[in-house]
Length: 255
Image (cartoon, rainbow, N blue to C red; front, side, top):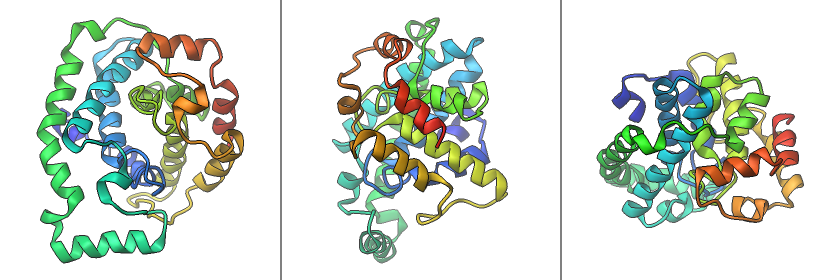
């Protein structure tokens, strides 16, 4: 929706986000709406900035506002809390689909939330992108590092920048993991024109998940993995520049 609001829909990049729906491969972490909105913000930041490093900082700063907007609306940012279901199981996923069919699309919990949040996220994104205080900072994002190492363009690295620090520096599930899974999805979508990976499609991201869980002993929280919280874009930039999560970034990029 944000891509269309900005007038620049990007079909293949949007379809590649499918495996982040359900909170990263249906594991219930951050809602797929947030990953999508963050990607749209990153794409627009790339168009508004002359330098990729400036666009990374802008995308991260605006994503913080997008996350806050979603949390204000839903009082959570996690899919499992929004849906009330464990979508990592066949029973949970079918149950959600049945509820949607029974109630009708217009009355399903997710679509009601999407409709209510749309004007709010548009306002948050447009306001953040226009805020001069968020411009002019050369920044880095762990998620952008992964995309770049996996062969993504400068624009694609900026598109994922807001994933950094657990999505908008919120400290939730690892944004570098989400970036690697999105890149796997992008490769799959380019090899399968016009198609989107389904909930059980292996785009190569099952191996990525296995590499990640081995590297982090099954921990998904950015706050726990990094051993700290990030109170600003500059703090996250300094962390990445100092080699923070470097081994994990390399492992994900090579997965």
